Image: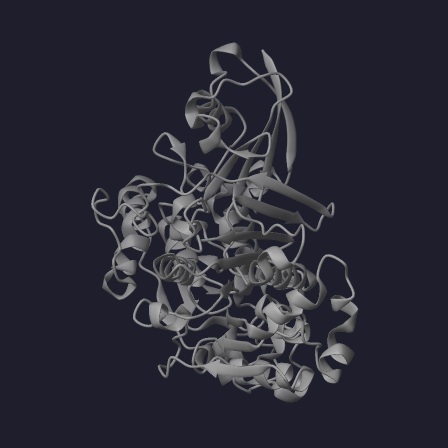
Length: 428
Length: 96
């Protein structure tokens, strides 16, 4: 067998000398084409380790126009202060090119603002790759990517992280006859209701958690690529890893096999109804709305009490800054951890979730009385949140109690305050 | 009564005041997984039941494990609890 070149030996010797890995696995890597979708907390370490390991071609895809923000830097470790504002996929591509100039790094682009992987482009994007890494951050992308990989028979290394938890699995069969690996849809045939889906943006995430999962994704991708040359290595197929940073536990669970009636990956195309034949012909919006829409429509009349108070109105942040004084009561309805991080002077924190408690509503009433010195009957209660969504819900809820003369929510929340009134107020 | 351990993860622990592991004594008449889920809803979860259930089963997006196996491999709602079983409810994560 031909010997590797000098630079190959120098660069990859530490993994090539591994008995289980060897020269042949390194050759597999050098011929491999890998697609990383998502250039965030998972995509950064995954792409960095794969480039370092010596994959032949590495393609990166993120939402067009998605740029590095300062709030990304605690976990998206390919970036630094100097690239805040730079296109993410481009910044990651630059980092991994510097890391390993021998790796052919390309940035893929949907050319549509705010769009990364989507139903219209997914099958074309994943075509011809040896493995795809799902490093995305939303439910729709996860189904789209899995369906595309199922149809194109490309293995999918899927990672997810939020808070202090991480999850990892390898989905989608490579097409081999005895391969019973499920696709994402086999395991999750019905999408979760939208109100049950958290994001790092709102729920928070401990920086190293996606770092761990993204790094493990790189390992799984290497195992998938090298196959039998990586002696004894078994990709995480039909298994899922659950990582909990709080007690540093790694649990591996057994997953179901491929569903022979799955609309995305079943090979028996004639017997399966509503089978997805092309990803760009499937209605993902309807699929994702399916249950959650039904939920909210059914639940709304049951929980909404009769409206007794006046309807809440809204004002601009700038207007609020002009009219507020020390007797004004501003209730900040963000979760307490957000409030502790930053808030407007004199604001009272009552998280949205606490507003169903009569006691907390009474607290607001008392504070209102105290500040207005008995003039609460004619005073206005102002509500603020991070971006102006929760404050609307809170204002409606407080209005409906009938206990307040006038409830007004501040449009655009603290984010608008930062834009319109005080640019030194942190935007996060 | 049958004593089992319940585990909640992926954020679902919030429904139990942040507690991830809870040993419980399940009444004999609730020994199947289908009944256990209803029992959990009625005795352990005090609010936001829609984060746990939809109709009479766990909501989509929750993986149910019986001793570290996907419950699809164990008969789902028909599975009969054994003393010492560990039953996990893990919310699927989507962040990245």
